[in-house]
Length: 112
Length: 117
Figure 1 (spheres, one colour):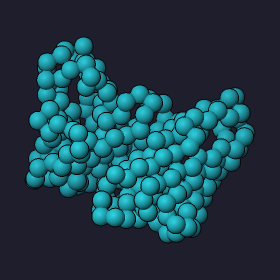
Figure 2 (cartoon, rainbow over the protein chains, first blue to last red; figure 1 turned 30 degrees about the vertical axis):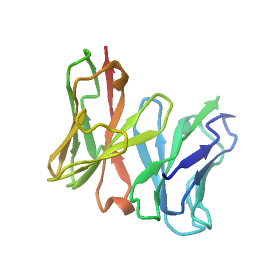
Figure 3 (cartoon, each protein chain N blue to C red; figure 1 turned 90 degrees about the horizontal axis):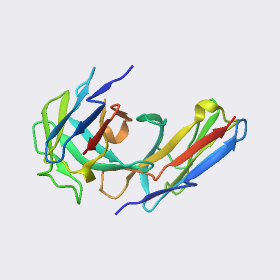
Figure 4 (cartoon, rainbow over the protein chains, first blue to last red; figure 1 turned 30 degrees about the horizontal axis):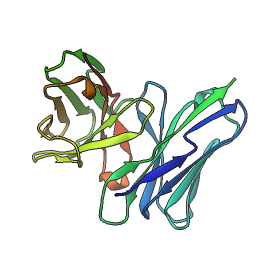
């Protein structure tokens, strides 16, 4: 079945440093969504990307969808303590299996 | 504010008892809701897709007789964990989408932390 992997699994960064998480799908995706889950909380939608090569920005966050629509990345510039949490990508396969599959997640911790 | 409400937030029950978890869409109608399970420090695993007025669709490996889903109205889906055992202890989260879910973001409830003793 469809698999969505994220690397790294964990990332510890000094406050102010940049952070990037990479998302790779075993199948081509029709779209990809990104969610953030704070410790003890529930996932909160961040953004959706649909087009091949699409890049979207939200303040310090930059999201990218690969040309082949099989990978995506989230980059955070100048991290802040409020960025702490686990970032999940989630994608829907192009191949008839209309299920939103969540990635393995990247847990970000910030060293003040 | 919250658009999906989940209740209870946490529950502790004895082994062998059943627990019902409610998921409500607050200001929109949801013909489809999703139930996820999340173990500590792991990803969200889809358990089943709840369809209003029809039977739920369960993912492979999820026992439909153990995890009963009822989607009786356009704003309410319930998950009942029957004859719960300690291995059922987990974080259960429901979600719903305002529009056609394939092209719309999912709104998640706050989750229910179930502990079976």
